[in-house]
Image 1 (cartoon, helix red, strand yellow):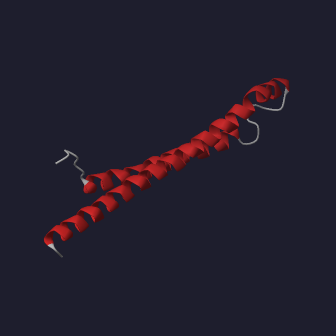
Image 2 (image 1 turned 120 degrees about the vertical axis):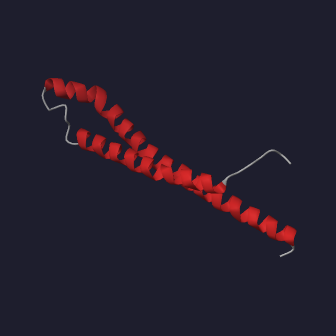
Image 3 (image 1 turned 180 degrees about the horizontal axis):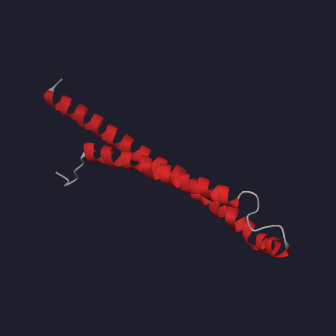
Length: 100
């Protein structure tokens, strides 16, 4: 025995928790997009100066926050798939041992 142990049910349950995290991250990205929409820093001299320094980093930050939601969805999906594959492999091995 290798000492390796998996609880596919638990892994599957925790994989579902990523759905709420994806929703939360997507909501944050939406709020940030709304806050940045339409040059919120204004069009006066000070606003344009601020935009010159901060508009590009703000846009990059928005893209990264959007990427967090996508990444979390990928992790949750990967965990769920791992649980399914492990369970299928374990069942197939048990069937082979039983001679089914």
